[in-house]
Length: 287
Image 1 (cartoon, rainbow, N blue to C red):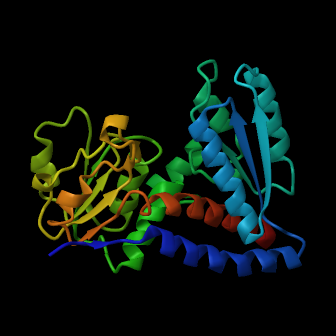
Image 2 (image 1 turned 180 degrees about the vertical axis):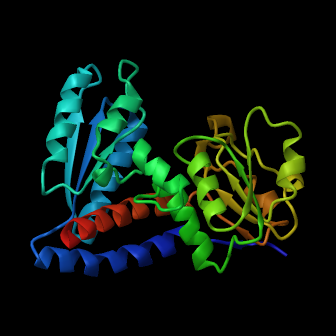
C-alpha cells in the first residue's frame, strides 16, 4: 500500500488564513506586525526566497520591508541597519537571507539581531532557549515539520526518530524539537557509519542532507513517517526537475506517511516565519 502524501501546501494555506484574524486584531490596536528582510547580493535562489517571503507577508496583512544591498557592501553598513531595525517599533521581526557573501562573519550578523526580533530563531540566546525546552522562536523549517506531524496525528512521544543532517538551520533544531516532544532521537551525518542501520529503526525519519534521492526504500522501516526537507534540482539530462532527499516513488511503497517535493515541507517554512512574526508582535503588544 502506498503511503499517504502529506499536503504541506493545503496545511500552510489553512494556517495563513488563521493568521489574518490575529494580524487584524493587532492592527486594530495600532500594532500591525512588521517583518524586515535583508538581502545581500544577487543570488538567484535567495532573490526568489525573499520575493516569496515578502509576498506571503502582504497576503496576510503584515507590513514588510525589503532591504537590498550589493554583494560588495561593507558588513558595517548592514550591521548599522540591523541596529536601526532593532530600535524600530514598526518592525517585530528581522531576517537576514543566507548565505551571505564570503567577506561577512555570518555569526556576527545573526547575533546582531535583537533576540526578541530573531524570527528565524538563529540567535544563540534563542538556540539556548530551544535546547532548554522553552523556545522563544523555533527555526521555521523544523517548526513546520512539527506542525505537519501534529496535523497528521503523529505524536513523537515514545517513538524512535532519526534526523539525517546536523545543520544549525534544520538538523540540530529538528532533533531538539523531537527530543522535547518525547522521542528518542538519533542524529546522523557524513561521519555516521552504517547509516541504513540507523534509519531502518526510525518510526519518524527526517532527511535534511541536500542530496537528491539519497534515502531509498531499503533504508526505511515499513510504516515509518518520512519527512523530506531537501530541495534539489536534477541535472538537465534527468529532466531538471525539483526533487527531495528521498526517492519518493520507492519510499512511498514502504512508508505510511511521506512529504512530497515540491508541495511538502517547503510551503510550511515561510508559513512558520509568518507565525513567528505574528507571535513577536503579540508578545510586544502584551508588554
